[in-house]
Length: 99
Image (cartoon, one colour):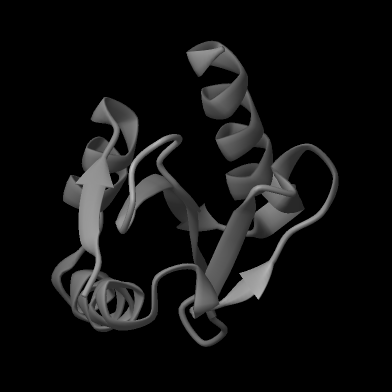
């Protein structure tokens, strides 16, 4: 079983969701806890170290990665809508800020 860690920003992403969106995300977080990086689909380009889980109906994406140097800890990078690839741009910016 994997542990979930949050960045300051991804925690705010989650808190800004409405109740029904949180229920969907909670189900995805449980899947990530069970499967780690095997959950979701791998991303490419600047986010090649990340995976995504998506909720098509709600338009939400969770972007997550394995914490560097830590076994079985998955960090949630961003949660948001795909519109204009916004969630991917946000995730890239957040990962670049960590470096």
